[in-house]
Amino acid sequence: MKVLTNHIGGEAVPPSTNAWLDDHDPATGQVAARVPRSGEADVNAAVAAARASLAGPWGGWSTAERADLMDEVADRIEQRLEDFAHAETEDTGKPLHTSKTLDIPRSVANFRFFAGAVRHSETAFHEMANGAFNYTLRRPLGVVALITPWNLPLYLLSWKVAPAMATGNAVVAKPSELTPQTASMLAEVLAEVGAPAGSFNLVHGNGPEVGGPLVSHRDVAGVSFTGGTATGALVAAAAAPKFKKLSLELGGKNPTLVFADADREAALNGAVRAGFTNTGQICLCGSRLLVERSIHDDFVDELVARVEALPQGDPMDEATRVGALVSEAHRDKVEGYVRLAREEGGTIRCGGVRPRLGGRLEGGWFLRPTVVTGLAPACRTATEEIFGPVVTVHPFDTEEEALAIANGVRYGLSASLWTQNLARAHRVAAALEVGMVWVNTWLMRDLRVPFGGLKDSGVGREGGKYSLSFYTDDKNVCIS
Image (cartoon, rainbow, N blue to C red; front, side, top):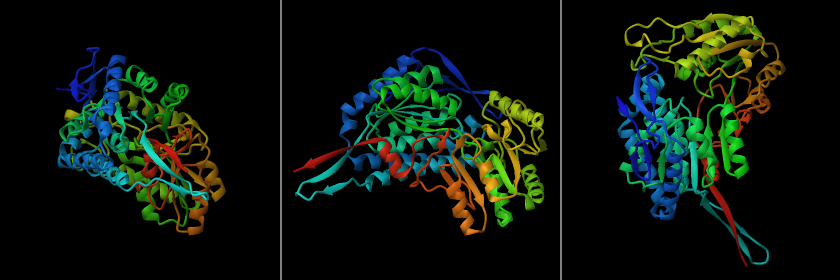
């Protein structure tokens, strides 16, 4: 069995508590690794190591040196893609195909992108009429806390680590205790490529015992958190009184809008991808499918046929496209929403049951992809974040009704809409109360654009110049 450690001040260290957590393989339910159950003392040590690195060699590194380091990290992860992908799949239960084609390649791209971004970043110069001029200096925040979820472990950790370190901050990272393996592997890679001791620190453990002390630590200047909305509210409450810079990327209940004039084949493929990629465990998944009434019945019939045909099985099998849910407790939660859907008058068109998978998968946390029709758009199943392989389908008659349903939730992260009417595409995209809209596609990502949501889906934006801005402070200098 693997035994993970914290990484503090350039050293692999056990938890000061001498307490441990079990890391389970969702496909089997068996323990795959032991994880430190760290505490406040470990957080304090990590923050102290980060501060020391800023006062030491790391604080003196140039932008070019930091960018080169990020490129070296990308190269090393790419060289070990198979190892990272297998660890990610063992931790999350997602298909190995997804880890190899999405999660790990995107992590590599994150490091390469932000290496280029800091090399080409510009600051402002303002000339004044009296001959004076102003220029802007951009400086790192200092010690930053990065807290990441279990659904896209390395993908989202690299999305934060790369810009934070590329801009010169020292990092204390807290990954999910459910999916810790690739975070530990990243710490090893950073040490291998010569990151100065303390520039990257990793503290494993649960939220109250590690995340809480980390967010409230007086020497942490900024907090970037990705996770659930309820936890995000706790993070905000702890950080706000200390005036920390804060970025929150939270939950979603994202609509997929299909108009009658859409390319039917493309929309069907898009709806299936949006609903069930990563077993529906992505904040951007389209869990509410809104279909114009004139095509609704035929569209749903074809959708159900395609969902029923999705290959579910051993995540380590390259042919598998639907894996396991991340934990037994999470599967219980999702199954609870399937029961609620029935109570609220919904019809389970497919799925909603545990598949019969024998052998080593018998104890795994699987659930068949589920399509529900007949629900009122304002019911709990259709408005609360389920974060699993459950899609509810709702007909609409007019563009106005579609927008009312789409906007009628407390979340506002993303949406996708399918139409061949260009005017409608622009009009509906502008009216959707979300931070991101895809037209005739889903999850097509450009790392330069702003990423984030409205309402209960978060505060702030990540990506490109937005990430560089978050992890730095601007200082104006006026010369007369």
